[in-house]
Length: 265
Image 1 (cartoon, helix red, strand yellow):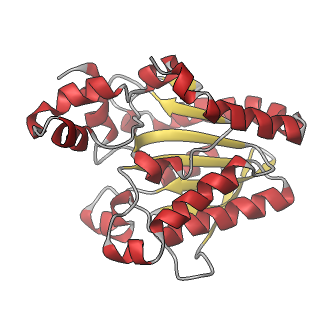
Image 2: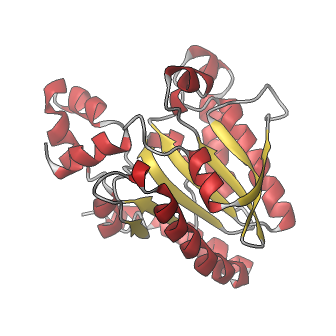
């Protein structure tokens, strides 16, 4: 197993800390909101307001479970359109009160079911991309596990994108890549290497801005320490972003995504 496939395997571990666990460790007084005001609630997206030390923030995460029952309740971390619309509702609320937005991402991708498509899955993702690109408040997106395709990107149009060491971010899964490109599902590890989907690869290619190392014996055994490091980084970076002129902040966010193609080797 190469290093890329090792990161994919670690990112998918059933006991990897969830978005809710990170929220509980990093923030105080978290108040969860529910529903998109259009169709219903989506357990795959957890979001609300909280305090980072004394700073009010909006926190939105893609939730995976540790048991079968938990995963059924959160649809195995695959959001439906109402989840993305709930996230957007919270982001627009954050914009109104100029609260920073922090997103925590861990998903294999948006849910591809017929019902999701009938309710406008593609439109919901596209609208998030458009609205986040011009949201008038700072956004930091943190990949804590898997980052699959548009389902992850819909919460990752941030001023900065951070990744845990064994988080991954790609246009599709390595299984899908090897099956589509080579018609050979056995070449998954080779696909993971080719896709440059690890935190190290993405940091090198300027898709990610910062990487946080994970303990060798497992993130799940050291969540408080890693969460403390993330919290400290947020307390250092967010005040700088809040002090940036809004026009400059939005222009830098726009330029960040426009330049991806020229960065990648």
